[in-house]
Length: 161
Image (cartoon, rainbow, N blue to C red; front, side, top):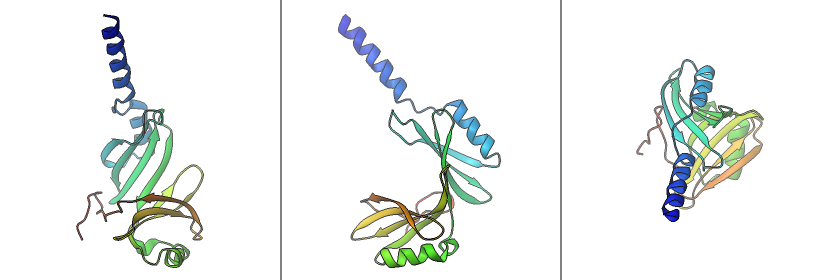
């Protein structure tokens, strides 16, 4: 009986930790920051310790994604931009460092520490990754993703090439 009670408590605790219902304070913070947003699509984007929510949405006919912690604190926002909107310094850095990679997605990002640009690069033989730059073309962060990236449309859906 003791084992059953412990198992029940463990299942209850685990289900609470992994619950993916977006807290109302997270939704409220998003709505206050983005009152014009439409078609908000929420996803749990973290482990049980981080408890981060990502929302994909349209605003001004542009695709955005924002991240919030479980308390409703804004973490960052990425806005899809055309490759032609990338600063020349960013394009030059990509050409110098990643000539064998193709830009699949380009975005502008904002977070409490800085604003910049992010590109999702792919090489069919080497996989893909994303790189963040300052507007001056200085790399500030790179994340390796071995499976590569696919282009997306303005609704966030994968586009077949």
